Every structure is written in structure tokens, then in C-alpha cells.
Length: 384
Image 1 (cartoon, rainbow, N blue to C red):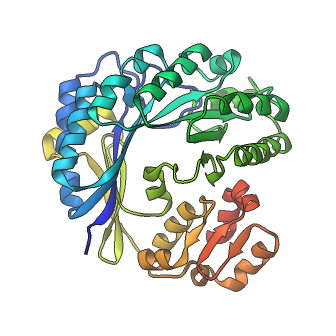
Image 2 (tube, rainbow, N blue to C red):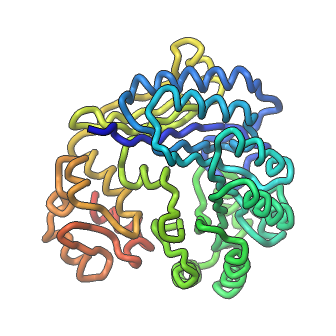
């Protein structure tokens, strides 16, 4: 029997500045000891290989923070050590998130040489005023130059945009989307701006510093996005992610399909099978606390628990319903021990199916396009 597939997530927690909308585990530091961080990542990687042995690595994902600030040598040794610790798929996908500043784009050749074969660029907007509002350090021109550089060095690249910004209308967003399509490759990630607790935007929005488009306008932008990208050959395969056929981000599909992955670095999460259950892990969030824990124990695990029963079903549902293809019922049952329709009670689901939010087929269960647009509300009905 072939080894189970595995994704490896590597978290680099540092950024040059903190974006006002960001609630990720990212930190600004004046200096980073690259050698110390490299050694700590390798030690925790070895611990992760003991946690989830006998797997075949399908994907490696460097996220953050801003992993394009990592020394290419660090990226290289982490990839090389991963290859030594686990079996690898011959076409392993190795993604690195990057900011499109000229400094970071200048590292693309070295990152490609290190083994990265896919980059995801945080462009976020193609408008100077929007970039300023979002706290981004790059200009529109830098972003477009970085995309050109990415095309030269990586067979696969993607970029992110954020919409439903203050003052934005369905018409202005449609124009920006059209411009973005002129630079798109095989993949685009398009996120509606949400105000997250603990961010600067949360405070600013609460005191009335800016006003977001209303729900009707935001919904119109979402629907226009789905239609335009579908027509352009990049249909949505997940709520916010669009790709040409066969070009979806395989690492993110591991999350959404509730497959196995390990996480290393501050705040990184892992989920991997242990017999009939899943082991859930979380590393310490603070960079310094994580470093100290790794130096002391060889890993920075802050939490480790077993996910079973209804919790297992609900986690798998929350992930799988994000996908346009929905949930493969047989695979879901093999992972959770329960058929999703039976676990939720088909009679209870009937009103949501009739309303056009859910679709039940013999082999699959999923949210419709209308249901994915309202997924948070839908999940409240399903797992309350």
C-alpha cells in the first residue's frame, strides 16, 4: 500500500510592517537571526516527521508573515530536509507567498533555484489609493513588474486581490478585475474585505473612519467575480479561489479535503490521521516563545489533541463545503466514519436543498454557488 499523502506547512512570522486588515500570526522585528531560525525550523521539521511518519509529501507551503523575506538558503535547506525525512511525490508542489516589492522580487531566481516552483503574490489592489488604504508597501507598477519577474522564474504563479473596499462599486471592481485578468496566469485569489477583531481596521471601522459597501453591493461584486472569471476560463474551485482546470493550489486542497498536513513554525497548525481519529496540533504563536520551546524540547507544540466523533464530522464539513465540487461522500466517510448526509439528517437538510443552498447527490454533498456565498450562515444552520 502506498504511503498516505501529506502537506507540509512552514510558517515565517515576520513582516516589514503590519497591514491594518491582517489578523494572521505576523510580527515586525528589526532584525531576524536567520541561522537560528533555520536551525529551529529544521528541528521542528524532524519532530513533525516523527508525528506523521510513513507519508508521501505532495505539497510544501511557505506562508506567513512574509516568507519571501526568508533567506533563500533557509528555504533550500528546509526543502532538502523534507525530502530526506519523507517520501516525496515526483511532482511535489512547493509554494511560497511573496510580497511584490522590487526587493523581494529580486530574490525570485534564488528561490526558484532553492526548489520553489509556485509563488503566490500579495498584490491586493491595482489602484494606488486602494494600496495606500490597505497599508501595502508596493506600488501598482512594482506589483506588475513582480508578476513579470514571477513569470520568468516559476511555471506556476498566482496573485491575490481584495475587493469590497470603501468607495468601491460593482462597476469599479469589474474594471479592476478586467485589468487583473490581463496579467493572470493559471490562478487568482479574490477576497472580500472582512473586518477582523484585533486589527487596526476593526478599531477604525468601529469609530466610523471608513464605510464599507453595503451587503447588496458586496454580493453583486461576488456574483460578478464568479461570472467573469468563469467566462475567462478560471472558474471558482473554492469560495475565493479561481483556477484553470488542473491548476488549483494542491496544498490548499489538502486543507479543504481534510487530508493530512503538518505545520512547523510559530502558530502553525497540523491535522493528521492516527488510526480512526485525527491528531490536531498547534505550535506556540509568539516567535520568541516558539524559539525557546524548540531549543528546550525540539518542538514548539502548544496544543495537541485528538479530534473524534462529531467534532471530526464538523471540521470536515466546514472545510469541504467551501469547495465548488463539494464533499466526496465515500472519502468523507472513510475519514470521519460517517456519511455527511446521514450525520446531518437528510430530513433536516431538505429545506436548505429546496431553497437552493445545498445539493445532495448519491456520491457528493455540497453547497451551491448561492450557498457558498452565504457559507457562514449556512454552517450555523448545519452545525449549531
